[in-house]
Image (tube, rainbow, N blue to C red):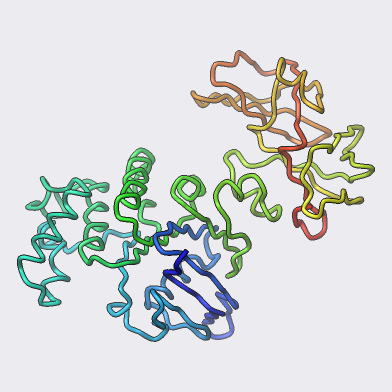
Length: 359
């Protein structure tokens, strides 16, 4: 795959505070890459470095083979969509879309063509004569995306564009952004702290922590083979269950329980020995009839029920630890009910107790 954006040995410091450290990242032509992490991990800072809004301390940034490390934002061939819509309130939607092009002295016929195309793609044609005050939050964000779109650039940068919207609008616009990427085929770099957005939008996800990328992989790989306990805990809703214990003779021991590990795919093939953590996602815990065929079963008592409509989440206690399982939304369960749960170790994750790296 041809590289679209290349980041080499990037450092960024504010005084004595190191925000990004020796960061390397290659983004393919037409790829949708999501930078994911909690607040303060450096994801927006990295995006602003790519955009040219921050001067790097060391390293280089290349876009389409050109070194743009010290180039102005307008010279980088990028379009950027911010968390805030940043629309000119006195201008119509059409005025907001054309403002940058008119300033660049583009011919009127070319401007009209670009605005028409962007308006069709984003379905904002009926809004062109309105001012931002007459638009909903979702419509304003579409206009903000359109303003980047009319620039006809190769790389689009999105800085948490949906975080100001309510849940339904976020879900709707998420679908539109994915369709937009499919129709355009441009490179898109998208910053979010929302793991659902990351999993649904990305070709690859870069999970960041403390100014470093700790795992760069497809959503499937990150979900099924998290590189460490932090990633495992961060991805998934509700988050992964963790039990602390030790591995002996290919069994995980926790309290009086011995969970067989046959079928688990170890990183280094050989089963390790010693203190470890096992992680099991709530959706990988099976109940009742299905539990009978699982390699490991245990009878538990329900101490919390959370109906969510499509699913029912239950809380139980396993070896003294709170443990969650996801059941069908129509499951008839109640507080105090006893049931059998089953675990398939091939779907579990094992981590070293001291380093927290995947085993």
